[in-house]
Length: 346
Image (cartoon, rainbow, N blue to C red; front, side):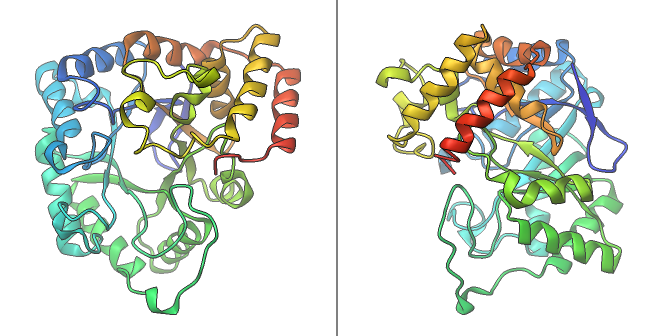
């Protein structure tokens, strides 16, 4: 396994992070246990969760993923072996504290305390804001339109003060962002410096061969400010494994079960680009899945790449990517495709 420092903290995390969002929906508790046992055995020390998981997110399953992790901690007695990340949901989900603005002192307090209970732990290593409260572009949205009447959100300084109090109490250790823009990250960093408040140590955004928009503005900030990317969807929801090629839709796959929910990478014009990347993997005798993950892992602005799997075969393939080497010629051909077909699924 490979490792990097999380921001400028003393935490050293595996460059492969175990994603958990299928546990409680596509995966049972027993399967979640099996995945965690195997990941730890492979020297993965970094797990990522969220209060609203599993996904697709719905009221009936809210919090189930954290509960599964909590039961595992309780049974295995190994909390100290894992660097655990979780998230507070942003606004828009009525069944989560009414659905309004979520980053108030009251809502952050409720969210942290309830996550700790579900996770059966006294602390969360990295606590992240899942998406912004303000009206901005995230989850692949394009065409930003500024509205002067949409400037109501919790003040960044007040958010950091609330989170600092939980850090002082020992209930969270460090903080990060998710689905954030370059403006959002830079403002949080500015406030933390000016007011001597906790720093955002990471940003968890989508990054993969079909979506490299992070490179445009955020990559420089990540490197210069030591707030690295935790890259989610390195396989573009499974499309970069090749399993959906030629309009295939395997049984029990995410697209077979939840195609209407997961539309970001199913755009018709993406299929041609996926095929070009697939052909590169074949040309150089690489596993397509592993080539896709490894391309993310080697980026200097990335701290860790978050993998997710619904089967043990998938998990083993994903983790084995750490042992893959991408030669310069492979990277050159990948970048040539990107120049011709930049970000078909932003």
